[in-house]
Length: 114
Image (cartoon, rainbow, N blue to C red; front, side, top):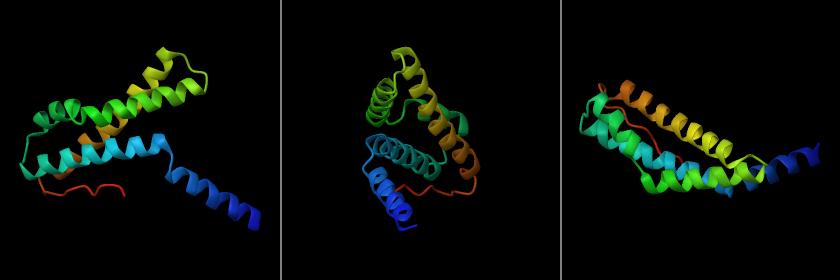
């Protein structure tokens, strides 16, 4: 039992320093900031979609690069790794767009990850 708990704690500690998760978190937090500014400025949903597609280019590129590298290390082809990375990025963007559509009227903001 103690071994199981120790293994779980070590696994969680390793995840805190995970490069993929850190890059995801940086991109997600950037997108959250874009969301929160757009909510404050009462941007239209259509305008926000365009904004979200172009937002956070540095964080987006870093996240994509690390996702591709990770997928390649598992044996994926470059094309498959890039497809996977694009899908993961789009999932995050879609989530923020959905949140924006729900929050723009009421002025609710998202909280960045720590």
